[in-house]
Picture 1 (cartoon, one colour):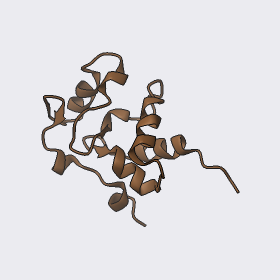
Picture 2 (spheres, rainbow, N blue to C red; picture 1 turned 90 degrees about the vertical axis):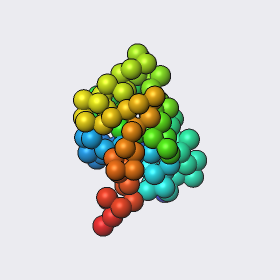
Picture 3 (spheres, rainbow, N blue to C red; picture 1 turned 180 degrees about the vertical axis):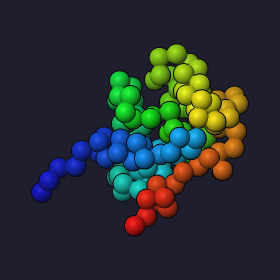
Picture 4 (cartoon, rainbow, N blue to C red; picture 1 turned 120 degrees about the vertical axis):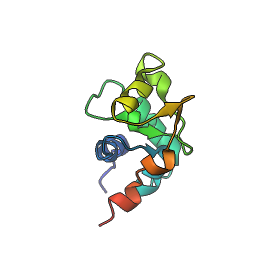
Length: 110
């Protein structure tokens, strides 16, 4: 049986999030049927800080909070990257989260 590389699977999904949109750790976990759920996606995101090909700034928690911002080196980098894509952020939270939300289970449905 072939062993899955969960981190690479997570990164593949994250690369598909369009600029100006965000998704959640849990949404990626559900899409990939990860047993460890959102926590596994969080570990993957923590491990990709030196991977410019993975737009980790587009992954937020279930209510749109920038919980991973401390992994970007400086506290405002994640917010700045999102704002450069037109995503408004106030008090570390995506302002229009429901309209910016990208669900891989819907968007990547075959």
